[in-house]
Image 1 (tube, helix red, strand yellow):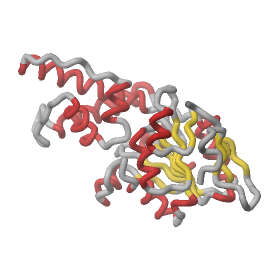
Image 2 (image 1 turned 45 degrees about the vertical axis):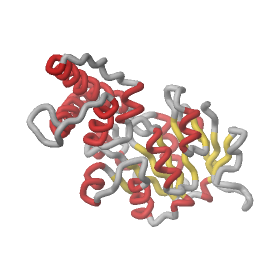
Image 3 (image 1 turned 180 degrees about the horizontal axis):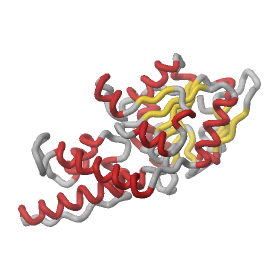
Image 4 (image 1 turned 90 degrees about the vertical axis):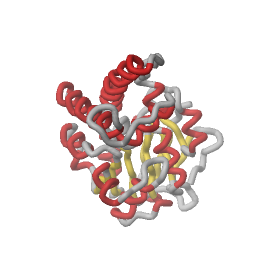
Length: 267
C-alpha cells in the first residue's frame, strides 16, 4: 500500500523526522542487537524453567513489541508477549540488565559496520531546508546524536529530541505524541503546520494523536502500509524518494496531495 505524495512547502512550518529507519539505516542494527540479547535470555529461561521459548523474530517481534520504544519499555513489551515478568533491577535477568546488554551490542554493531543515512531522506531534508522549512529529528534512543554524527547528517536538523530528553523531561514514549510535540515547541511551530515522518506503527499513531498536519508512514518492507493507514497515516511511501516538494500553491491547496484515493486532500 505504498503511494506517492507531494508536500506544499508554503503550508508547512516544520518537518519532524524519526531517526532509525527514516533518516539512518540503523533499524537493522537495533533488531540484530535485540535478537542477540533476547535469544541469550530465552535460552537461559528455557533451561531454568523447562518451558521452551522460540527465538526472537528480528522482523515481526521487533516491529510488534520493540520498534519506536525506549529500551526498557521495549524489553517489557516483548517479555510480556511471552508471558515473562522480570524485576526492574538486577545484575543479569532484569529489565535493566537486558536493556544495557542490548545497548552494548548496538554500539558494537554500529562500531563494526558504521552508520549510513538514506540518500532519499538526505535529499528531502536538503530540499526542505533550501525552502526555509525547519527540520527536527526525534528518537527514543540516547545514541541519537552519535548516530547522526556518524552518518554526517547532524547539521541537517535545527532541533533534536532524543532518549536523554525523554528521561530528563519525563516525556512519555510513543504512541504518545510527546516527542513530536516537544520538537514542534522548540521550533515554535504549530502542529497543524508540521509533517511527521515515521516508520514505526507507534510513531504513526503518535503523529495522529498529536493532531499533526501531515503524517507520512515509511513502509520500507511493504508489509505495514495497511496498518499505518489504520493508525492515522495520511500517506504511506516505501521511500522518501516517493515524496516530492512544491514551493508554492494555490490558496485552496492542502498541505499534502496523495494518490491514495481516500486521502487526496489530507490536512
